[in-house]
Length: 184
Image 1 (cartoon, one colour):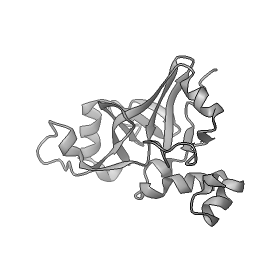
Image 2 (cartoon, helix red, strand yellow; image 1 turned 90 degrees about the vertical axis):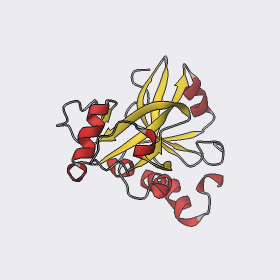
Image 3 (cartoon, helix red, strand yellow; image 1 turned 30 degrees about the vertical axis):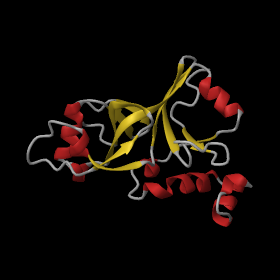
């Protein structure tokens, strides 16, 4: 399985996925035979960046929200951003969207928030070898092409519905005409 679902999004099937991942959209960063790694895009936490990240220089606004990237390792902090000109931009996950992990990249983004879009994530979503494949067989996830708007939206609460609508067909119909489209 070359790159599997890397660079795709997984949209949870709400009739099957009822735990932490209910109604989530996950950007898959890496997926191969040894496992998978991704970030939940639509779980904004009720906590400011400065409450989670220590050492933000004085004079820099640390009030930006932080997102829960997943239930694995809350000490793992990462940034999705759209600025390839950072000194350490990280890896390009999808065209025009980069994953960075350095404190320096975060400070650089915070120094110029008007020049770039970015979100900071605490934790991540991870799967062991063949675990995600098993979930796919159980129809836990809908695979779709990513959209940078879902990553940088002002309203992450609608990301799940928007992702399903953009999938089109029955997904769009059920989102627009039922309370829980995955139950039909």
